[in-house]
Length: 105
Picture 1 (spheres, rainbow, N blue to C red):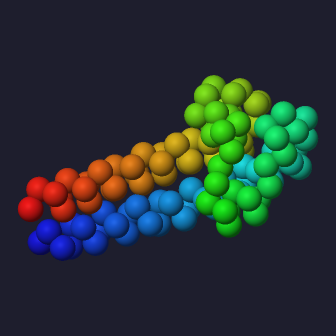
Picture 2 (cartoon, rainbow, N blue to C red):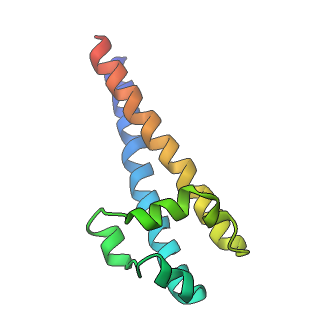
Picture 3 (cartoon, rainbow, N blue to C red):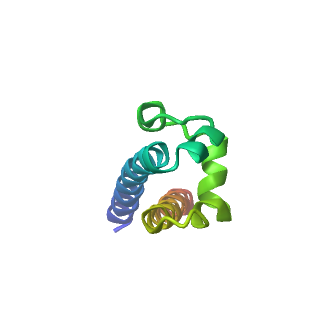
């Protein structure tokens, strides 16, 4: 039973992480294409930097987690910011579940 819980939590964390990376790449593209001034303010993050390097800049992270990402007036951007936030909660919760399961036994 514990093994299947760990597998499920690991799967949720892995899929959530991959999906969040994809949505972050969409945010970067949207910023670049639809909000060029904001994109410049955020340090011109690139899609490849966010996806391949596994690195999200602090400015972009702040944008996603502050009210800035919700105040763009862009419904698609707001939706993507919320998706990233939810996926992050899924990933963190899944990792916490894995740690609890593994160290509880």
